[in-house]
Image 1 (cartoon, helix red, strand yellow):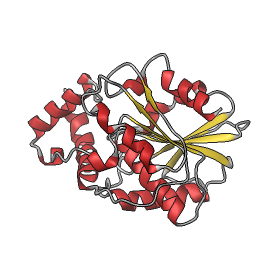
Image 2 (cartoon, helix red, strand yellow):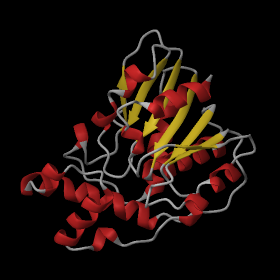
Image 3 (cartoon, rainbow, N blue to C red):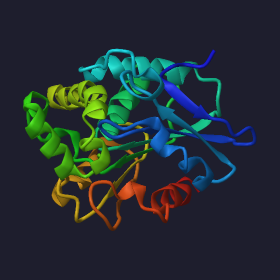
Image 4 (cartoon, rainbow, N blue to C red):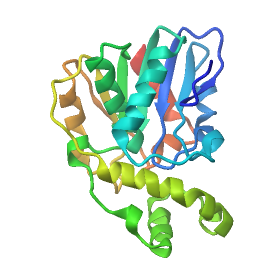
Length: 243
C-alpha cells in the first residue's frame, strides 16, 4: 500500500530512486517535471507533508522531528529501488538531514548520497518568527522570498487555503533546534546560489562537516529558488554526482 507521505512517480525500469524533500510550502506537483529530467534510470518520490496537495484537508504539522520520524518509517517500508538518495531544498534540506539521522540511529535503510540545497547549515538557521506576522506582513514576506506566484498572493481564497500550511511550515523551521551528533557515514553535498539572500555563502560549507565521507559545495546561478531553473541544471548535476 502506498504511503501518504510519499508521492511516487512510476518508472518501472529505474534501478535507483531519489527522495525529494520540497522547500517550505512546496507542493509535490511542482517537481513532477524532474522525473523526465532525471533520466530513465532514476525514479522519483516526493515527500508529501500534510496540509498541501493531495493532503490539503489534513492539519499541517508544526514540529520537525515527528514529521521526520513518519517519513523515515515510510522510506524504510518502501519497496522501491535498493539504491537511493536524498535531495532537500531549503526547509526540505533540514528535514532530509533529520530523516538521515533517524535512519542512521535506528539502523534503517540509508541513502548513498544526500544533497542539501538552498539552505544554511542547520546550526546557523535564521530564527525569524514569520509564522506570527499578521496577514498583510505575512504576504509581504512571502512576496519577498519569491517562491509564491503573484497571482496566488493576490487571490484571497487561495491564500485562505494555503496560509495555515505556510504558517505551520514557518513554525516548524522556527522551532527546530540543531543538536551536535556524530558525523554521518553518507556523503553530503551542498547546492547553493551566491545571489540567494536567504543563505549566506559562509554558512554552506559547514554541511560537509556533518559527514565522514567526502562532499563538495556546488554553486548555481539564480536566487533562492534556483532549483526551478528551466534548463533543469539541478537534476543534471544530481545525475552527475550519482554517477
